[in-house]
Amino acid sequence: MLRALLLENVHPAAVEILRDAGIEVETRPGALDEAELIETLADFQILGIRSKTQVTRHVLESVPGLLAVGTFSIGTNQIDLEAAASRGVAVFNAPFSNTRSVVELAVAEIIALTRRLTVRDKALHDGVWDKTADGSHEVRGRTLGIIGYGNIGSQLSVLAENLGMKVVFFDAAEKLALGNARRVETLDELLEVADAVTIHVDGRAGNAGMFTGDMFARMKPGAIFLNLSRGFVVDLESLREHILSGHLAGAAVDVFPSEPKKRGDRFDSPLRGLDNVVLTPHVGGSTLEAQESIGHFVAKKLRDYFLTGSTTLSVNLPNLQLEHTGVGRIALLHRNVPGVLAAVNQVFADHGANIEAQMLATRGDLGYVVTDISDVTQRGASKKLMAMDTTVRLRIRDAFDRPEFPPGPAAG
Image (cartoon, rainbow, N blue to C red; front, side, top):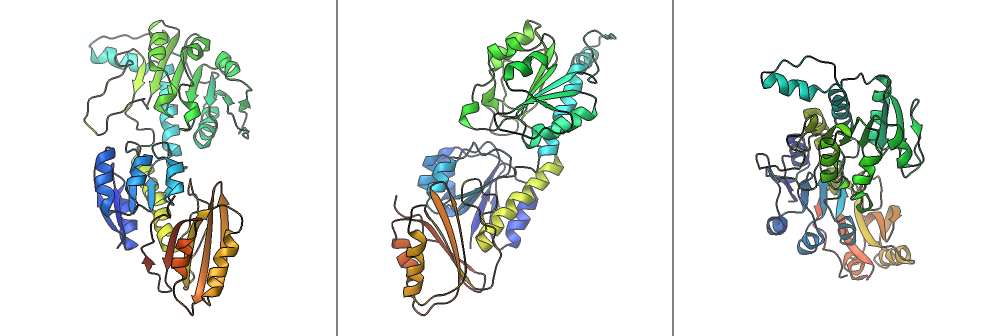
């Protein structure tokens, strides 16, 4: 039986979906460090994580039986995707499921910071009646600058415009502007006009340290700043300096360069204790609605991968959308070099295989060929496929919808 290990409080919906598919599931509340993960995964073929567990190259090399990783979040920078692909480990994420939750938190924080609600709240909790309009503004008519116009940035753009804000955005890729949003060509142009700057970039290495002291200095005096994307994107010491100097009116940060592994652990940051600064513990996508949606989405992708071989929306393998056909299926991940398909089909021909259907997709250095076979007159084809020096991983299903444990990745 296939076994799945789900860490970091993955939603129970995921457990139910995997168990209904005949997969044995074990859950644990927190993250595991590298050594713990390697030791624990020896008995599992599927791993489910959120943002804290790091699936490094060493982990992947140490656990040859691992077949798939589901990251129940948007980001995948906690996984070495290249190493996973090279060993035929499929990785699935949830690129859309918590978008609305992140956007709503950003809208709430933009309003709260612009109205200085955190300062007014603290004063009353301290017993001080500080009724004043000093520093408080409406968001209507103000300009929101969005850095990163993907799923989250573009949806935030629409809601901000509905609040009466003007929207400008910067993205390194070509993006279609929604509503009356205006694309700018440089970050400098965005920083010069934005009353609120919010970052929604992905976790690629090139985004590390993109927002430093020079960037904060170029922002409009009295502007506010939000980061709900990745912790390593922003220099928090520089942000602290510009808050204390009064150059920036406030900030909201949901992600940090180093985050505690589990609930209740101590948290430290140079931003603690600052006026009009909202700190949240990486909860942008942590609503019950979003976590349930993510649980459904990722678990179904994992289920479909094992039931049919479908790799639709895998972030690191060639994508094929497959259905169960009722005949035997051989799924071969291989190095993407000329002649592989011909060699595979020669093996099938040599063993009297009756091919019902065949699909091929490639992605970078990998190819994925899936062949449905209704009859084989001679056994031993799978051994020959595994012996090919281009083979990365082979998976076989019989006509009765029962998966066979695949051999591990080929050497190299």
